[in-house]
Image 1 (cartoon, one colour):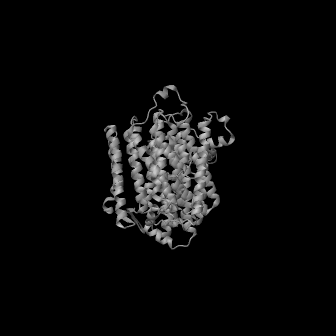
Image 2 (cartoon, helix red, strand yellow):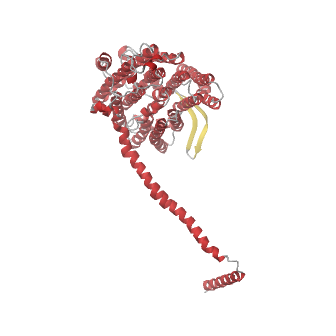
Image 3 (cartoon, one colour):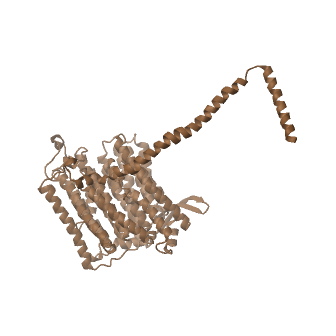
Length: 633
């Protein structure tokens, strides 16, 4: 059954892309919306059926080869899919969350002139994301990897008439290419080392190698560079906050639930390789922790509601990489799952607020929306509690699993992770209180038109809120009497669970510290933004030095501009003015000038005088005879 149906899962979104792409100027918006959403719903229902088929079959992995794609010498790459416990969960996330976001987009984008094109792009993105997670080898994965990068560029710059939006799309595209180059070189090295890029051939060979082998360390570092670009880690994360220029459903789909988790998926898929590279794992843990902390600090002072969520995404991705680095692959993937629920919910909730506020995104001009946007407020509060790690909501279980493993690995990394958890709770409740509490701070005219979003937008919020609330039940730890279902399920994908060696007392103490940090942050945010009704000052000159550093994102864009962009611009200007214009153009123009000037002289020989032509002919004959005589002599 799996063999005969699996190929339909990516095919359905591709059909949606083709149909809506061709009919974008012909079909009605309602038809386009339901076609775009319907194909994703069908793919989701098929994914559910395939999941239970795999679960009940007793099989761990099913390989489906469509055709022999590339054959050259020793290189044989089939276009084939691998369906196992890891890819089965990813299919449910991509198609399930994807359907809710498509449904939401019907209402959010209804007035947009590019409605049909938008749904075509969304369908194409889902297609490439499915190819990425289904590929049975690194090349098929890379095709999906590049495809989602292309769709990200198209969707971030969807409103391309605004130059800053187009610039954000270009920035995302270029920074992703930096990471992608590392990934591609890593794939070349894998083929050179193992003679194949198929997971089924690479991983068994790698398992027999010694831990710490230089070639494995180099391969994993290169793969991690690719993950840094796609999953927005230091130093390649600055593209993701700028990507908020795209429509809010794009932020929810690409930059919260799916594309940015591609790097985590790739490393989890390659866990056999990374387990053999302890140096790489340490680097991943350090960079993930640093990214989580820096992004959380930046989020503290942002006033754009989407920018807060963007830096929150970067910070949560850092948590996931911390989990990967300390060997907690299950915990990291568990956080991918719960993050998809609560972050998609928060982004769509922010979109509902922006929709009600007529595209206003500055929280300083909001306030008092709780009574006007009751469903949006209630669902976003659930998402906020979940991301803050307050039990029994989903984020508590996944975040604490990562922190527990980090505590075993390195106490300093755990302490930074705990501090980040405190900051996360603070900036998220800050966002909620500035948006929904107190008095309305916008114009009276705008206040009169504030209204709750239509049902096609609020229903996805309600579903995601339920998932954000109960999603943690999928992997309840033993300390609470659970059986850690997700951990056992992922064993079938070759991801061995890392058992905690902590006592139950230690586990409860770590959980208590995390929850206490979140509750203290909640209390502090409530006191500052509700009791004292504090509103961030618009004048940057009145901010403290630390607040300026945070608000200006540690000046990372300015630093990159100074040490990378400007030198490259100067270098390119030198090549243009000297090498291109003077050397290359001079050489080419010199040939042209020589031909022109030479022809001016040679044309004088064509005088039309017959006697001169006879003289030249005789002269030529004599010259040939003389040359022949001298050659013989």
